[in-house]
Length: 410
Image 1: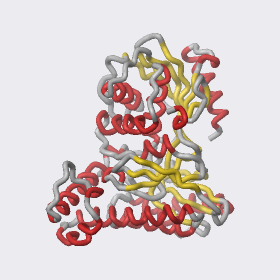
Image 2: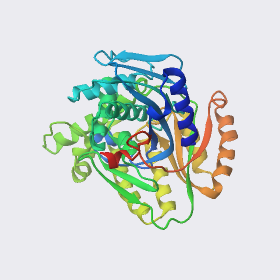
Image 3: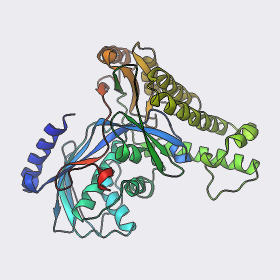
Image 4: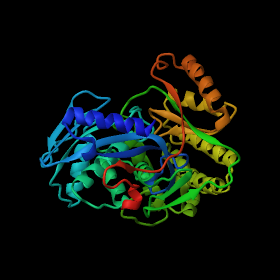
């Protein structure tokens, strides 16, 4: 994704569609994210890792004196148009849900929105696995805040973007996606403690060689709210309640992150099936994150990759979230020479797999995966693709008066 080329294209479209001169426009970039380790534990207050990639959502916009939002997309037909005071209810399958949700999240938090905006947005790969929806939400939040002269720290925007999905759309996710999008830095692992909302940027020191991120897309395009995502969250909470009751401890909210490892070891046999599997995934993934952070800080990419592969295996066996096409991609990737490790990217019910690969072998891996996947999933082959990416800084303004990273601005 060439940010400069895409930015100039958006500015031309903004001028053609809304009459906004490029000198008066702003452009914000919200990258997509991957989660190398920490799968499915953010909503249980676990510690997770994230990394932004050099693909994402770009929004070219200008504040409007009118109290309405008018947005159009390069990928979707029609225009999203509504008044700030009446964003309306979410519409099934509508990309405009995220800007409506952003307005609601800001106003419910007590922020005053007196100016709307006009804009044009673009972002590939809407099929899932990279938190493209959260990136759209972040871009819309930042544009609305900028247009209304609101100074909102990155940490608060994480919670505002989570509110779009939790409160407006009904998806019970944690803060992994938003943290990766807003906080990441190139060649760093973003470590997020979902219990405290604290984060740390872990640099990669003395790696064994050049590396790339390979994304293998399955072609599945079903929304998370139509999968078992929320059911898995509920199962984790049910497991936590049994463990806490067995330990004779009460918590305001039963989540696996509230259960001590010693309590889990003592009482795990009391968990019925499949709650035992959900807890097994949580506690083993917590340990993989611990080991992975140490491996990353030492530049041990082979060990880090092996932990990613183990995470993928636990997602399939214990969390039971892998659809057959995603499992096929995972199995193909982990068998490829030059792949350090792989796992599902996102919830695993649709979307893609992510692999950490030796950069010298990346193109060869991509060329091998494509026909192999087509043989296993011929019905999805035409929609599937493989892309080679790299790590990237988090959300930031590319044009306009701010022109700096969101973290620095906040």
